[in-house]
Length: 366
Image (cartoon, rainbow, N blue to C red; front, side, top):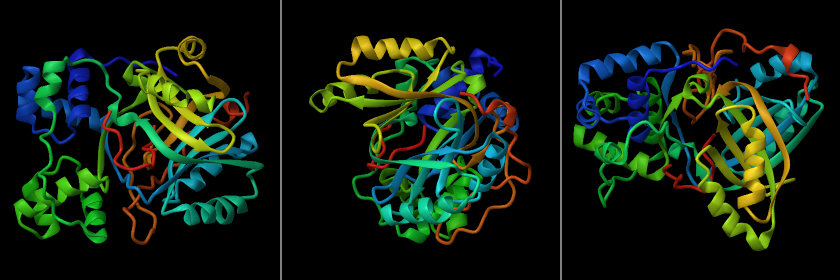
């Protein structure tokens, strides 16, 4: 995968939007010593090129997350990935090396819904040779705290959002879903326009948004196409952990600057760790770091991601860019999920090879 280069100004802007995706342009301009109009134009260009975008999703306590390893014939990898993007339960699809062909991140409305999807939906796809499901019991850290490391502490402090009011309006399921729908179209929509969309006053709209963000009914996360990030290599590690050393191991893993997801799982492993790395050589370096700095941890398996055609319910092309979608699939009671008319651009010839912490116990996606 080609490693593309962004300018320092572009990276500083993206780091600022990682800190606060809805920060006013004037606030960002003041923090970065730039011009609001220039920043807005720069962001628009990065979006149009599919290099950066703001993801909108949900991470509440009653949701159940799982990682599912899929083995399938190489000739069917593209078709299976395309088929599964139509299911709202699928949050992310990675095409990987090693003992799995696809690694799916699923988010379902409880364990019963997860069981139905894995058994009744995925279990009926004839092309799938084997499934291995790992139930995620807790998020230890996720990619909302991952940063480009381009702005300093004082600039970051100037961008941090204010603490939410102590008393927030109650948010019903329908309003939360409507908020996600509106924000999915325009994550930086003004409060005035948001109020008009919801049919409420501006103070009410502001309060509802604050409530949704505080409870995890709405999560906003600035995403950067991985080949442009400076960390083009994406790897998964599946770890066994000595129960007596678990607390210390978890603490050290969360401090790993490359980590995008650290999740406790129940299945064949104890912890699933997703990382972005500078080079393929770092895959071995990280393993050496585990051995030296994280007592009680053993790498049971690992995979390098060849391509991510679907990330946080967004279609990603072969260059790692987000491509806007058109028609959402039907999913009663859920935020519409974009579906792009084009086939997922995967090369099947290459697949048969061998931080705000979420308010919920459900992992955010890597």
